[in-house]
Length: 402
Ligand SMILES: Cc1ncc(COP(=O)(O)O)c(C=O)c1O
Image (cartoon, rainbow, N blue to C red; front, side, top):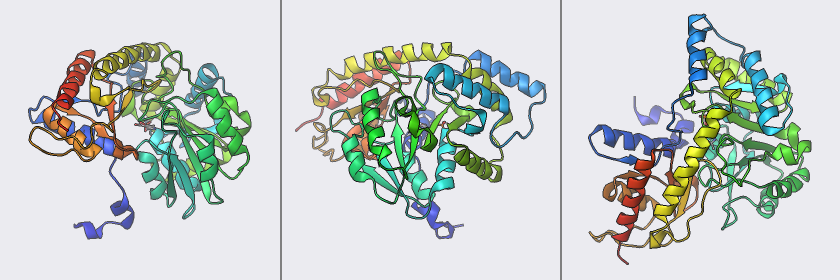
């Protein structure tokens, strides 16, 4: 079969840039290159024992059949309890939909609501998948620029971007790739704008909720604007906060109409999330300790990485991320510089290639997140790798000439 037999939809679709970078790093490692993988988008911790043991129990007890497409009732009860305990939010089980990962929920939510040419406001820098999922569902991603210092969406920009065709606005706090965390005041200002536009739905992606570094704290849009609950879909899941990326469990909390529509779609696509993973996630969502241990560890690694990278003159003042496990580095003093072999680094993609060659470090360029010239470094790896990799980045940058 040749490419011209593929659908226009697939031909137009980009492969996830972060998954692609991580896969390239893995390939080079398997070929014997000693690469430090800073492009990784998942905790390097193993899934905690309690959910893993629950999954084994589920298998031995034969809980291996199809489930309700919406997710098992007891898992949805555990999710309601988690939202009550951790987020001070009240949801009933019919307002919860469980999917095979947060990405799956976002895809089905867009599929359930977007008509051709509906607009989806995606603040940049954005997680790589939002624009592509919106396009895949027939929508038009509208990329909007952030505040240049905080790299967050402002209420003024939001106000200017909403049109009669706006269907969704995407909010992601803590953010991938910047690690920015929205404050109560910032969310209040956004909520004020949204109140004037009742036709706009809100995707509140809170998948990195568990990794927020004090004194910052996680606040959901619904905490500050409960009146927007009916048109907000809160997305979260087991992947990041519970080190369960491979188990593929995510959930959405929102209006019963949207939940029922997503359930109908899931019944015709994946049928239901894995029954075994559901049993594991039920236990994971009721535990808080493993997430706290991971958060404290990520905070130390963040500080270690920032300390080392700050010694590079070319990186200037590094913004310390308040959440998630990514550093988003400004490359404006790096682009335009020449390597010792005379190659000019014109774009952030060139810097990524240079660091892979010269520093044996795999990163992802800002262009993948719609914001250049920047570089994303994941610090979800060991302290030793952070020390070695960040020092290698500093050394490689020091070799560049004007
Ligand atoms: C911002 C953001 N949202 C959602 C997801 C999806 O996570 P999952 O599908 O594993 O639940 C990711 C994964 O990288 C992410 O970074």
